[in-house]
Every structure is written in C-alpha cells, then in structure tokens.
Image (cartoon, rainbow, N blue to C red; front, side, top):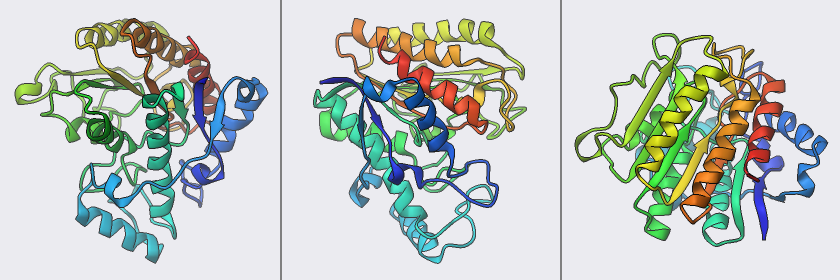
Length: 313
C-alpha cells in the first residue's frame, strides 16, 4: 500500500477557465512540475480521476441545479452564477471529474489502498446545494461528506478549511448537521468574498458548537495562523472525527493576487502534518486534502507540495 495517493492527470487539469480568468487551466501543471521536481511522484501513488455519477452528485446538489449545469455545459456560454463562474462546453464533465477524483481518493482511503490522499484541482467549497459560486461548479467536498455517510455510515466527519475564502458552500450545506465538524481559518469576510464566516456562526440547532469559524485580519502571517490553528486542533480533538477532510487553498499564502493573508507554505505543511498526527492518534489515519483556491502559481507549487509532504507525517 502506498502511504499517500495523489489524484492527477489531464482529466483533472481540464477544470479551469480561459481568457485570463484567475482559475486558469495551468494550475494543475504548476503543481505537478514541482511535485516531480521534489521527487514526490516516486514516493506517492499517482492515479487518474473518474467521472462522478449523477447519483453521487445528487447526494449534495439539487436535481434542478444539475439539469441547469448540464444545459449550460452544452450551450457553452453565459455564467453558472452571478458572474464569477463562466460556462464552457464540457464544464459539467470537467466538474464531474473533479468530484470523481475526490471520491476516488476517499474510497481508496476507506478501502485501505492508501493511508492519506491529495487532489490538487478540487476543494470547490463555494458551490451550494442549489447553485454554483466563486469559480466552483460542483462542491466535491460536500458530495464526499454525503458519500462517506452513505457508503460507510460515518457519523463524525471533520471538514477543515485554510483557504483565504470562507468555505460557505460546505458551512451552509451542513450548518444544522451535528455529524459534520467544521473548522475554517479565513480572511475576515468584511474584506473578502464571500463575506461570510463570522466568529459567531457556530452552527444551528443540534449542531451548535460543532462549527468553528476563525476570521483573520488582512496581513495575518504564520504566527497568527499558529494561534488560530491551535484552536482548530482543540476543536477537532473534542469530537474525535472518523475522517478528516482538509481544503488547503494556496490563496492564503502571501502574494496571492486576489487575497490579503500572508501565510507561508510552512503553514500548509504544518496543517497536513498535524492532521496526519491527529488521525493516527485517533487510530484510523484518514486524511484527504484538496487543493482549493490559489492564483499565484509559485504559491500553488509551494503550498500544495508542502501539503503532500506533510501527509507523510
């Protein structure tokens, strides 16, 4: 068994937008060149993605939205949301391959074929149950959570997000669900899209207290991250989750053109190492990391590969 599985390849790379869009189709290559340069392809098992089925997508998304996405994908014009996420011919198929990659990784972990996994072009955390948002056509994280519950009857799944943007699609998708433990370090929504994730948003009803939002001021560096991260670890420890799902957007690193945090890649490496150690203490070793955002290509290369290295513990 390879300790760490990485989902990569041309099918996964297809999810990207042209004409100078920040989420360009070159993001996969930026990660993979550095992955090879560090010799990580010799330490990891690399596997292609597959297309998620409609049945799997509908675990999280509504039938109406799925039909709309397919229609926009055939038309290849307009937007999937209010103006952030362009439609293109094949966008549905490309997004389904992203979801499929996250599910391949989750299945490999649960079946014991890998201990941990990383999916670079994934972590589409803004898409809601009924619509696209923020460059995200389908929410692979939300679908994976529902899939793990259906296929393996897990009742304590932790979602951890260190992308600069709040993971609103996941948060509001499970806001009243006590089985989903949520922890999100992000730039304060008063300064950055999507404007959500205030510290007083801690879940609703029976889920109150299962959600942790830690908004940070612009310019927050590794020292600020370390303090917030200790809160995340304490939050997770208190729930003993059965599976850890990390969204590690590289847009929280210093120098991203769309955001204002100032972490280094060491923060992302630490997050992966600490979650790996936590998963081992809990006795299961299950950590699945997804790349998320990131619009500075050097940061993508450094941050995501730090995560892969961190998954080795």
